[in-house]
Length: 362
Ligand SMILES: [Zn+2]
Image 1 (cartoon, rainbow, N blue to C red):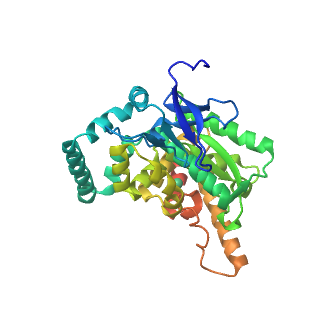
Image 2: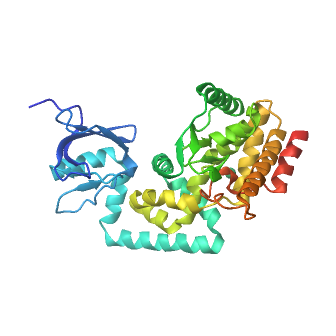
Image 3: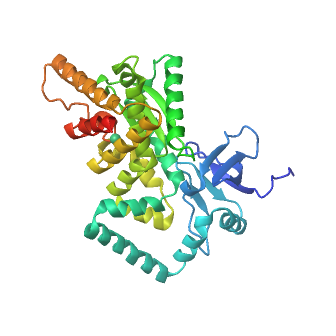
């Protein structure tokens, strides 16, 4: 008998593709579930946020099957040992299980849920969405972000063709800018350079849940030699990351779904529908204003004039006019809404340009 690592649980692992299970060992580390094959090489070890695993209800009878986000699953070998282990390692589980064990708690949960829905309609969805977002574990943001990026890579984006030194220069400038404005620490961001498959996506940037920021080559090339504008746009996207706007929009778009997810700790369905939702959602003027204000804050901390953003918007407007001229059409919107939350999906209003010009004078 081989020696099991400390506090590991034996289980059967189904990869979601093949029907044959593999013997696996489950361990946790920093709120992640690590799944390793008992037999080396049987499958690639994987790690999944604990909160993204759909843990089964603890019933008095029957087996235990936990669903992983990508269709894979885990089955208990020894139900008693499983319950014990899950209870110790998955903090959220214990109260959910306790709650589910009495119909009274279920009734209370239902009343709370209806109350939340009523509150949303009574006092406004955005306000309630902020509160609900706070209850969504951060690990869900990261998982949604990964899913959306993978889906964008399959459809809209392809690898960057920017020279590595240009990428590095922007990375360095962005990191420096964040550090200067937030010397005490800021949320982690991951900058992803991509080229757009569809030229209509054009100069663009997008902040995904979890801190991934996508930047298109066309945006960097819009104003050659002028990194200030690129940094200003990144500062705006950082504002969305800082305030968790993308997740908030998702919560708002499927408020009831999220309330149910939070009540039962099951985010699988919502994570799956995130790419489609994000493609159709846009930011409100208020959220854009908040992100613009953060952009100004970051630029100032780095000694960049906010005027760079006004200049950028003008260049973007020229690009838009040129493109529509070439198309021989006047619609001006085709393709811009390919991703609702993307930076140039909402043409800069005179108000926004004015905001950056004024900020430059202060
Ligand atoms: Zn924005």
